[in-house]
Length: 110
Image 1 (cartoon, rainbow, N blue to C red):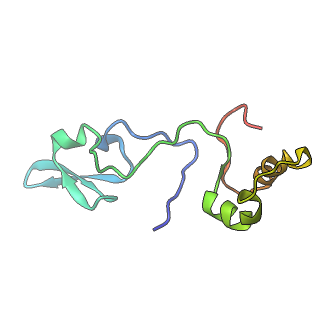
Image 2 (cartoon, one colour):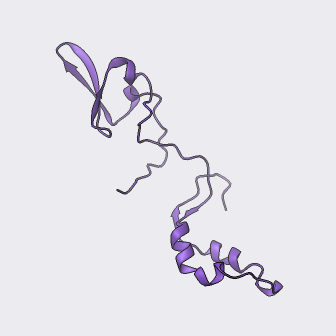
């Protein structure tokens, strides 16, 4: 299953505040239904964030790359020790050119 990133959205403080949670009145009792976990939460549970919540906050970060794809494309360089000073920055150059999966979210990112 793939993931999505919604830029500028903060993680809700509780299920009650979450856009994925619906309020349902069942026999005059209020329940919350989590559309992401496909389950009901009682009022007390909905006041918190359950451990199985699929929403995760990303910390501030630079550009995120696909490490596996990078390794596959640059296996030749990664499996060598560069002794010659002429090649000292080769790996750094490769990293600079790696395709970005998620752009940086830091204000001061390069």
